[in-house]
Length: 341
Image 1 (cartoon, rainbow, N blue to C red):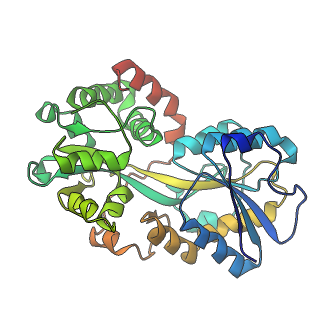
Image 2: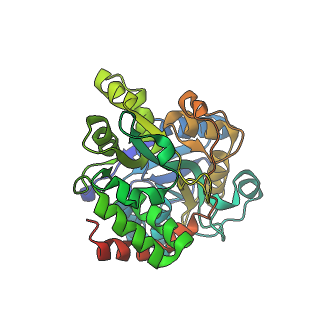
Image 3: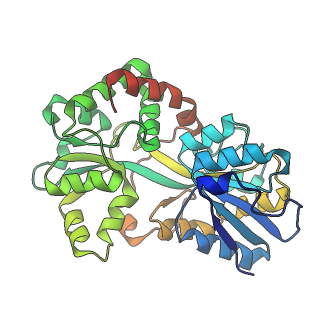
């Protein structure tokens, strides 16, 4: 049977439950803040392998957290999926998840991609890379994120606003590595080097480099791959003007974040939910993550998208991503203090 998929808006979020609340042996109800068509392949592959239907409710993370809280013990939600450790942490703080002990998940996923108590698990990785203008910048001049705050690059940096969760987690990693004072010095330096006030999404930062508005930008790697593989000639031309750098190779490694999921606290189909998470760590599912949205798989040895393969291996920061969530409030306060809007 084909998986059911429902999009939820704010208006829909105040309506009744989308699914029946009784537990059924052949279904799992997934509340997802991922909005990629390729995820449909994940759901269908799970159904094909197990016979368990996947019912999907889509919305942004805050909507889904609010909905699960409102539904309470009657919630039909079995699994919540979202992106970035900061959002997983918010769901954890609101009591959305329950602890899961799974030998499969513990063996398949690296320790850095698992919550210490099994509240949630990371299934795909997103590198927060630095992008540079090929004509104006020698990539050998950029070794670390610290270079973005160097006086050499005053007026040359494009980066998103401080309310972006990707930037909040990047700064949270700085707090873990350098302490609050060191992280604040870096954030102030980046503000001083901005080419313009923060605006737009990750793709807009890369386009800013291609257009010459700035020489350096920060974005998740897969936005760049989308431009490289776009059907639009202008997108591909823009991407060709830009190079990618994986910073901190002589130190802690490039900051990576996660697409992750956990079993909801009152899951009516708990066994199916755990089975679904274990499937997401399988070779089959990991290949879909790696090719569908050009993400890095969480499991080692999985064949990646050809563009990602062409970049070779690079050192990733192995900090447990739960720390990024724990440091999120500190990062937000630092952004406020340095005037990063």
